[in-house]
Every structure is written in C-alpha cells, then in structure tokens.
Amino acid sequence: MSAEPAPGPVPAAPVSVEDSTASRGTASTRPGSSVPELTVSGVSKVYRARGQGRRKVAAVDDVSFAIAPGAAVGLVGASGSGKSTLARLITGSERPTAGSITFGPADIGKLRARGLRNLHHQVQMVFQDPYGALNPLHTVEYTVSRPCQNFLRMSAGQARRRVGDLLETVGLVPASQFAAKLPHQLSGGQRQRVLIARALACEPGLIVADEPVSMLDVSLRAGVLDLLAELRRERGLSLLYITHDLLSARVVTDELLVLYQGRIVERGPTRQVLQHPQHSYTVRLLDAVANPLAASASAAAASVTATPSPATPSPSTDRGRS
Ligand code: ADP
Ligand code: MG
Image (spheres, rainbow, N blue to C red):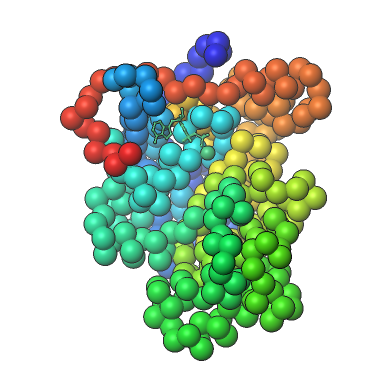
C-alpha cells in the first residue's frame, strides 16, 4: 500500500469532542443526565502483527476524545484504521497498551470481573454482522429477555413482558409475532433490530455501534440508522457510531472523529466536517462514498485503505490480551 501524503496527527493534547465551540450548548449535551461521560485519553493499542515475526503494529495510536452524556459521535475511517480495536477497548474486551478510558468513575482498562459486568450493563455493543451475532437456535424472545434477567434481575415473566415493549421500541410489531421467531426467519434489518433491542434491554448509557448497517441491504440501512438516531434522542443515550461511510454518519451523529492509521486526523461537528473537510484523507473518504460507481472513486477507496504504522517496540508496556 502506498504511503499517501502522510496525514499528520491532530495536536496531541486531549481534546474533548464536546469542547468544540460549534457543539457547545447544543442538545447533544444534557446537563443533569445520569449517563456518565466517556473519556479516552492518550490511548494506544499495539499488536504483534500476524505472521510477521516480532514486528508490532499500533492499531490505535495516542487517541484522545470524550463523549458527553447524550452525545452522538461518529468514528470514521477506512478498513484497518483501528475503529474496531477502539470499540473493543471502550467496551472492555481488550486493554489499552497505554492511556486510559473512563466511563464515569470506572477506569475501563483496569476493570476486573465484577467491574466488567457492571460496565457491560452500561456500555452495550451493536455489531456489524447481525447474522453471526445471534444464536440460530434461540428465539427472539429468549435473546432479548436474557439481559433483562441477567443484568436487571427480572423474573422470567417480567422479562417476557419487557421483551414486548422492547420489540415495539425497535419497530418489530406486532411484538407477539416476532417474539417466537428464530433468526433465520428474519430479514437482516429485522435481525439488527433484535440486536438493538437486546442492547437496550440492559438500559445502557452508551451504545457502541460498529458498522451496524454495512452488512444490510441498502434498502434497509436508512431504517436502522433512523432507529438509532431516534433512540439516542428519546432515551438520552450516548452513541459511538463507527463507520467507513461518512455520509451515513450524517444521519446519526453530531460530531465526527476521522481515524487514519490509528490516529485522529480530523475532528469537528459532523456538518462542518462533511461540508468543509480540512484533511486530504477526509476528502478522499468523502469522494469514495459520494461517487461509489465512479472508477475514480474505487481507486480513491482503495487508496485510503489504512495500514497501521509499525509501533515503537515496547513489549513491557503491552498489557493486551490478544
Ligand atoms: P477497522 O475496524 O478500522 O477495520 P481494526 O481495528 O480491525 O480496523 O484493525 C486495525 C489494525 O490492527 C489492522 O491492521 C488489523 O490487522 C490490526 N489488528 C486488529 N486486531 C488485531 C489482533 N488481534 N492482532 C493483530 N493485529 C490486529
Ligand atoms: Mg472494523
């Protein structure tokens, strides 16, 4: 992969997304909300490259941002730019090599079993693949009711009643019909709605949605994106929406972070970044999605596929479990 005019990282000092003047005081921040703030400070994640001896790659490299209570932030970048790694760090399934991530009082990188369980109550993930994320043998009711029983300590009867409410919330109506269905009886969009209902069942404060519509038919994408936007508005949830598609971020987010080779190269209010992108990488990402049928756009898409930079060797600092 050719080294594109290497986009330089944005200034190193931790900058809260909500610090941007354009977003201050908008509906994205909710004073008095019970949802904690997420802060990511100087976070890096170094992996040992697969099949390449002792070479290390920095999948995430000195990333800092914050998500205010109730805000919706988009994390955009080409494949390999480090988006899913950052999602795994935020949801506590991996630990950072350096830096810290906090959600309210919880220091996510240091949580042990009970702390992680509490975190999973509050921070829920919606995955890219609605096919792989559902057990083919479990009915919709079973899938959505489990978190109600596990996290909210509801009885089976209480959980069943709540499943009905949750399915209606995500647009699977009549709920009684959907409750008994198995995953193979649902469309991709319906499966993703089941996964969103399962995430909501825990009453989370933050949802991390990693490319939630990229495996869906184009015709189903807008419905799922509208649902995420509506849930976030109505429930005061914070949202980290991860995508390679800058235009889809317009529907769901107030703020954008553009990730290139594990580093944030541009950030700002969504509208501003889309209308006046400052960084050449952002421009190329936009070209790639705005003209998907044009040959030049394919070339652009290929050229922005990110390759992580070799990391500074520091074996002793890598606490990762991967
Ligand atoms: P994205 O989600 O933006 O496509 P990822 O976070 O999946 O990017 O990957 C970022 C980089 O880190 C890629 O080069 C990928 O190969 C590498 N990477 C991710 N997970 C691992 C792992 N467990 N071991 C080694 N390298 C990894
Ligand atoms: Mg990914």
